[in-house]
Length: 80
Image (cartoon, rainbow, N blue to C red; front, side, top):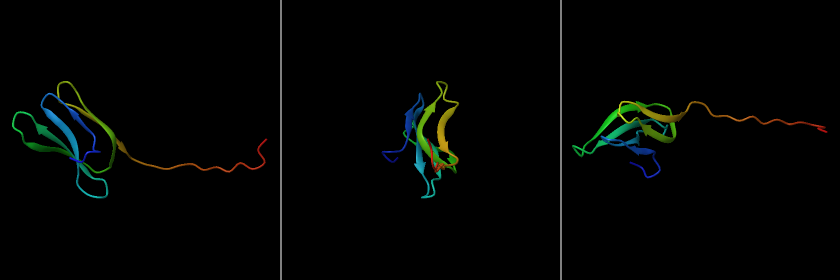
């Protein structure tokens, strides 16, 4: 687990992202308290932004990802 990687604690263990490649693919992993083992839950192909949360029953994960980035630059001449 990278220190800047988002993580959260649930009843079963610690949920975190593990980077797979430099293009931004990551796996969501769970380090289980009961067994001390880490297992991969899913692979995310898009860039993950900050934040991850787990529901109280441990059945749902919420995270943010970046689908598209961009900006708008406008030049307004003779503005009064």
